[in-house]
Image (cartoon, rainbow, N blue to C red; front, side, top):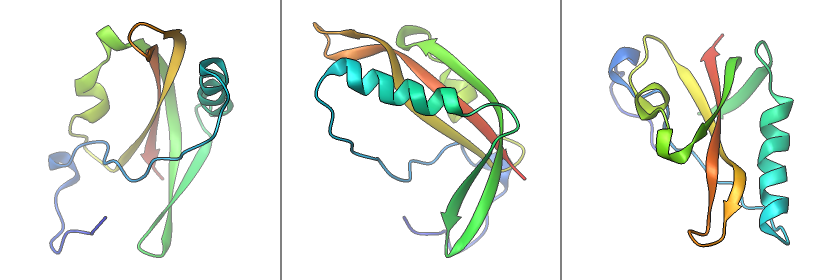
Length: 114
């Protein structure tokens, strides 16, 4: 991902920018769900998450963790503009719907730059 040549106001930027996808080999949908939930359960308000950006480490403090049905996902809250740099970590959660080949929920970890 390239860094823009000119800085932008954080308020004009979305709260999230996809940076990477982590691929993990699992043997069943249940294992995948458990992995996502384990990561989300470990993060609590006040915890720090560090992200490397341009050779420097940037710290974010977790402010909240929310779980949402996919049909009620808070798109504006997750992807909308923010007044300051923020981070969202999003994972699948809930039951696996075999017919749709998808999990029914998403867990979102919200964090702000420290």
